[in-house]
Image (cartoon, rainbow, N blue to C red; front, top):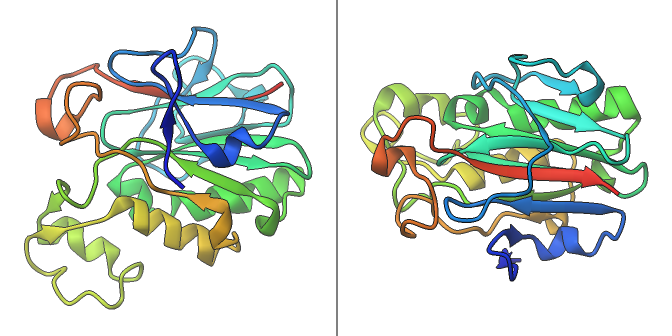
Length: 218
């Protein structure tokens, strides 16, 4: 299920658009969501926090909330932004999954945290991935590749320079965490080779250039 561009230039997931109780968007280098959202100091870890605990410069990589009109976001420029939603309990989350966070299981940690804090059941969750670097462009050395052995047990090339599909890695982690594969929309543009519409750290090495993925309960 591919993302589609809205008239204002933001990208949205048809999967999440079926939910009239939430609003979401994936910003680009040329179209940003309206201001007024909470965002974290991201550290490529696995911690998820409730938006009520948010403070300036709080270090974590995922935010969640069950409170309407609280806009939560993550910032990316090649990393995978994952927006989660629970229609049964009306809970949303925004997850930042770089390669380190992906390898450490930020996606599955987020699912577990949502279950513990809000009573969310993995089978009820919907997940949409935003624009991020694709396997076409994400080449890694063995030091990084070896961290993906448990996620890609069929791979025999992780001990040498190779490519990694971060979206597929996170999709697998979500399925292992109990999500229905049909409830995961992971088809998104590659930020590195899809042109200047997207910020890409791998392509441009431009400090401070980030895109925002926003999730909100209406």
